[in-house]
Image: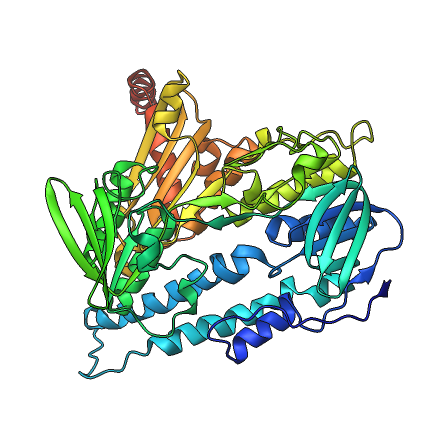
Length: 521
């Protein structure tokens, strides 16, 4: 490929240390030169988050001519301000919590131990920078993708203009994929903007631990970061409009996590009404009514854990007939937009705001955009996706498929089997026996419809149920599968054993009793 000679400085990250500079050199290099397009691309991808990266690299590996456009940081939210930094922070916070509970395991920590929040955050940035190589502009170029740093906008039915610091480029395409993701937004809380706040896009820039932290929203993001900061030593106030935490999960599952968070010192103000924010003598004040009581809470920082808005503005979607709403780009089950030549994947169009969902959707875009029927591969559909997810609190909550309430709403009858971790030997030995595995099957069968696990390693253990659902394997097969002892994953087999017991009816027992009696003659 040929390139222009222009260079640009690119964005800066805070605290702008050596690790952030490594990251930027990978995902938004200051000396990057955009290619000069040579003919029409099989597919042009807008956005280099997970969905865009996977779409681009798989298409290139298949032999397609591919262009990938990113105006900010390659790797998207997941690498830069989402999954990767949050899990790095959570791991450090877990280590701090383990130290505080070390006496339980016979380890006596002397008084005056030093806790270094800045070092914990530096560790996260170092590991994020290390991982960023996988999403780097240079790597994708070597893999056959033409990488353009700049803003992309549809200018015609088969053209996209890339606006970069060194000039504009017009790209022609056969197909295009919109993978521009979503961004954090804040609720219209009175006084919030004036007081200032953090989101997942800014919280990981902190190098000083806030002594008092207010978190608005007790969904996955709010709960994960509230618990992490509480374990670092912040006094955390968690404000939620609905009752309890994680309102989409089973109530008893969320209650177990809430108990753990409460032990970590988090103060939950749920069923919150009339929330207002103010500034008082250098601090920020959260005023809220919770369960009939009024609270005025003083904090040093406010973290917003609710609200996502699709990045659909400025793409020229109106010019090419791509419909979108405040929830994102409109797509059918093949991820085709209202313009049949243009597809979308990831947070820009999905209700599942997960990295693994974006990955799965990218595969659907590849199949439908590059191999349209009747080329022999058939049409891939989001209807076939079996989507697990996990909230990485301690313990974790993982889920796949239906909840019991979903089945009832669809008029389906289910049998539900729940096995508690306090009866699983490894969970007891690990001191991680709060939680359970729960599976729903179609009534009278072993067909798995959905499952929830609350456990220290729930995100890993949910995969067994997910695979079974994808492969059409029932609880009978899981029950007949040997699981290593002792592992926490045994809890999955134990739910299958509960189902097995229901198949041993009184009639079968009477028959066997007579048979065994006859054999004793």
